[in-house]
Length: 290
Image (cartoon, rainbow, N blue to C red; front, side, top):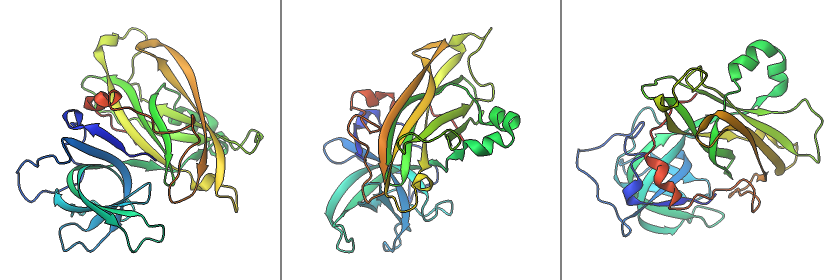
């Protein structure tokens, strides 16, 4: 996974932390020449002199150690929780305790939020009670802006049109086709979305809806054949065609999921490719998903 670096001016998305606590109400000044970082990772228990109970293990194997800013001590946090972290780097050094020579980054924590993390759903499970489970898992469009492998996960960032005053929690799942015969050992997965009627439709004014941002990480370790460390994956999803809510289009992306210290997709496949210019959409309101 390639960690994103985004300009300071557009980093409003994670200003409100999901489960953080501050020692005071002071504003924290940004470091590194006005740049800051956004990374995905998992919480890891650490003895850090009482300032924070956890470090963040990024998907590339490096570790973020909190030395300033928000002190992460909330009871809502727990070992292994997946998080999306906004921070500045104060210093770095090689991690002597790491067998692969990874890095420790000492950071000032600006904001952190937990990431919806799920296991894939098997198509055979849906077929076991097809009418009820198909309706529940949904077939509503969802616009994926990024999809990439990182750590044990297929990570996705997406946009959904929602009502301006919506408080509806949308349902997001990754369905694995374990029914159709496998082709070249490729695992076929489909992103599914249930908007619970919080979506544009016939007789509804498109201007009443706004694009909301969301993210999710799916743990793909269960997809690996016994004894294997990698597997080809083909992802499919149905999206709105641009801003025209009346039309949809099917998208596909392919890559190879590899279980390793640093998991990457094949070039041109499922990878993290957002540029700094495109990241201005980080100001978009977020949508609640489950």
